[in-house]
Length: 58
Image 1: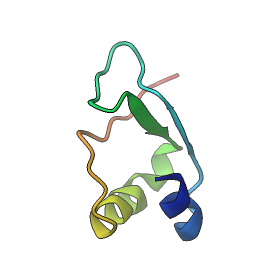
Image 2 (image 1 turned 90 degrees about the horizontal axis):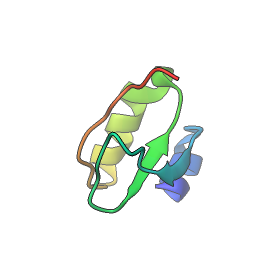
Image 3 (image 1 turned 90 degrees about the vertical axis):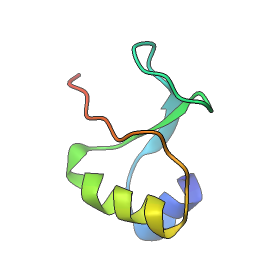
């Protein structure tokens, strides 16, 4: 995901999944909400598996 994000210019980073969420791999991609649509397109294009796209208030 980090490589694919860099190639498409989508800023973000992998983080441990927050405790109130769960994911099989234990990691989540953290990025600004404005990148959500482009991120979903990238995930689908690269066939990167994901469980959900969630926006959280910090």
